[in-house]
Image 1 (cartoon, helix red, strand yellow):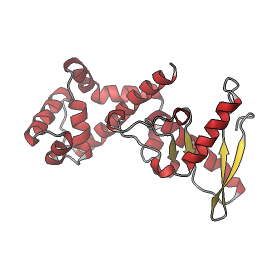
Image 2 (cartoon, one colour; image 1 turned 60 degrees about the vertical axis):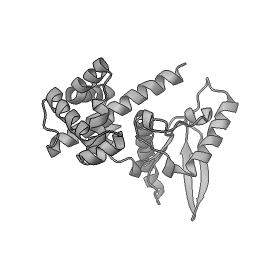
Image 3 (cartoon, helix red, strand yellow; image 1 turned 90 degrees about the vertical axis):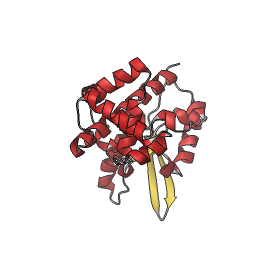
Image 4 (cartoon, helix red, strand yellow; image 1 turned 135 degrees about the vertical axis):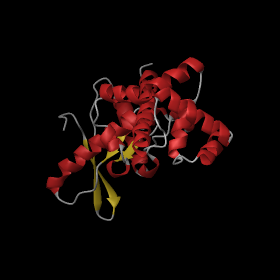
Amino acid sequence: MNQRAPLIWAPVGSGRVAVIVGNLDENVSLRTTIASLNALFNVSQNVSDGFDPTPSDQRSTPGDGTKDRIRVGLGRPVVRVDEVIRSYREAQRACDAVTRFGGRAIAASFQDIGIYRLLATVDPAELDAYCTDHVGALRDHDARTNGDLCQTLEVYLRCGGRPQEAASLLHTHRNTVLYRIERIEEILGINVRDPETQLILSIALRSLSMISDSIARANNESR
């Protein structure tokens, strides 16, 4: 733990105590630090609304500037003192996940982030290479034609390969979805109906969306 990390103990009910660890930034004023801690406490009371890996163009954006500056990661509750370090490391991984993949979310619990527990441990360059290998051609095609085949494929897979359900979510006709799937198969040279291929594509598309969102967020925060 960082030598300049303040430790905050907060009762959360049923005899449990939350331990909050944060890093002090010499370039951040005390007023901003206090405001961020207050926002953190408000956020931690409702963590269930935190991690949201939905692509940024499909979710609402909160307008609280203070909350935009913090990220909250929670490890699983522990009973013994010697287990605290494990929970702390889980909280770090959850925080990494919400920072890299959570979009506008500011809180994530280690036990609720699913596959992002694994993706957060992957080197960003390797993850980008994985996306390029499996859906790069589709991404480039969309960029050239101002198309939406990546979105169509993501929704189609999320619907379990059911074209009618995907068409409903995309506000288009079932035959349009089927035509787009055929084009996707031609561009990528794959069979979208193959279960293993669906898994590979799902991971690649989710990672691609989160990488794009992470880059956009980093650009906004640097302004």
